[in-house]
Amino acid sequence: MNRITINPKILYGKPIIKGTRISVEFILELLSSGMTTENILKEYPHLKKDDIMAAIEYATTTIKKEEVLPLEISDKR
Image 1 (spheres, rainbow, N blue to C red):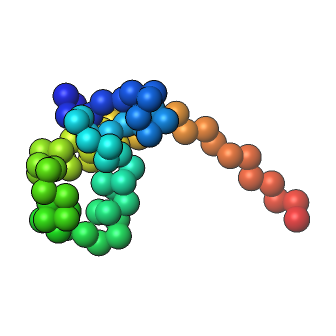
Image 2: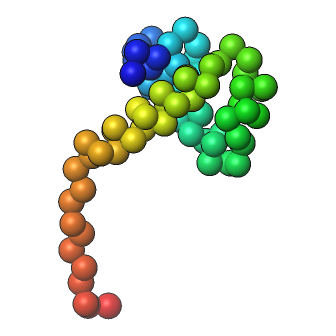
């Protein structure tokens, strides 16, 4: 996780890859759009594979800590 940083002065405090202005969110969007790690590294040569893996790990850890509250489902329509 030492590759991810949060600074309120950069991208409104979104988690980013340290030393860049590339957010974890952006990395995840690229991956979910179908880009491979290799494609991302070609487009952004200053990134390392470990940066992409750190973004995925950060997102996974964040979701694991998320509290999920049950929704009330009403049978009334």
